[in-house]
Length: 202
Image (tube, rainbow, N blue to C red; front, side, top):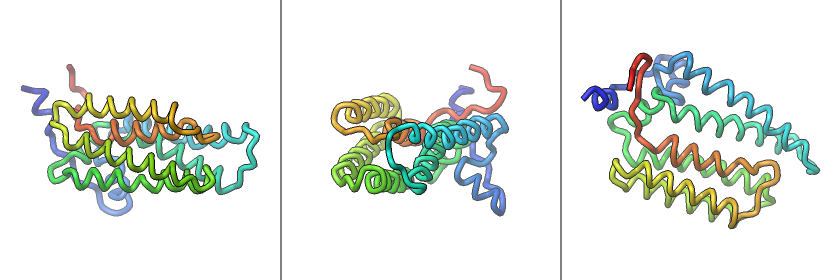
């Protein structure tokens, strides 16, 4: 009984001003530990991703390396942030249905377009294939009964890894992009999980 009550604890309201804007991204009421888990790896990824790309024999522009840094920050941070209890309470609060979740997923089509245009030389097949799979997979997860959403999401995430490995040519310097991209959206964001609080015990 206690676990069921924990699952539906309400999210606190966002704060006012610029702090409220942050709350709407990461979830109001994030603990210091959650903030550290989100920020430190994200900053590390923003530094490591362009450094890794720079080791390749590619003639990168400033804008390309900047995009790689932003994607590293966003995707690593997104995987971790969307998995926190604060984000689960916020993004799965009452009133957040399939339209809101598909809207969140849809915003990330921009990521696919930027990678295809700036890092894959205008690869329209990449845009069409990845975008179609993302929207189809997200729709299937949201249409599944709640108790089946986790295995459906993990199965579809596994298929995305196989497609990335065997159907698509890798993006030099961004071999990590699609695995983290689909992990953030299909698993970390879409799944409704028990939002535990500090001190809860199993």
